[in-house]
Length: 305
Image (cartoon, rainbow, N blue to C red; front, side, top):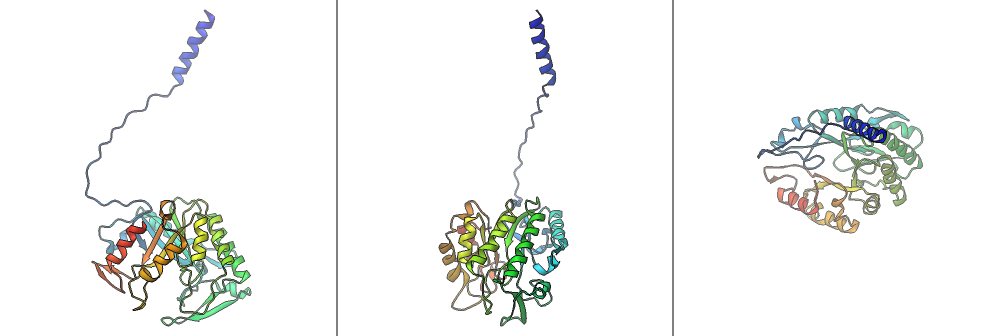
């Protein structure tokens, strides 16, 4: 009897401790003709939130993309100012977007230096260059040990703040080349050796283990290495059919070759793929040698978004 009473008491205790069954919720979706933003995919707004991009019309956007110079984020050696990125994150979040960003070290903007002046004062070698369409600009030597030391330290600090951030969907590796595009075309500034390029790429992967990364397709050896680390690809002149030259264009002369040589044809299955159009394209009428056909057709075939 005592044994039976103990079992009954234990059963009663278990019954009392069991949670109440959850209520069943029935959802019946209503058909809608509205366009929905697919998180992390589709059209990105550039340096503006979705509600300040009237040229998008009814197109939804889930991502705001920005790029800043290293000089704007590290005002002195080891002294960081994250206000620009934090502000961009807040502005994107306000309109239901997440942020994608790039940090550049070389630009053609004389009012905002690509790399901080304190780096040159510490003894890092700098190059002065002038493209035909711009005035003189400066950038560090990408093979200088001091550049590599200080910039990889910056990348670590960047990752310490933004890796895994809920409102950051993508980081674009832009530490090399003009505008972060991994080339110095129109100048005589040397690109980094393959070994030093790998140091920069590896620094980003270590700093952002929990955040998707992309890098420019222009650097074939670098992109091959990036692919091995689980990094996606990006291009910045998508749709160009002759805006820069009458005998050469990105869409026929460069991108198909680079995609084959880097072996990224199927990388879209596991990693992000992104691009920026070269110029603008409105109402199907191309500007700067761009057309909607030259842009959207290859976009579908390469799963670029």
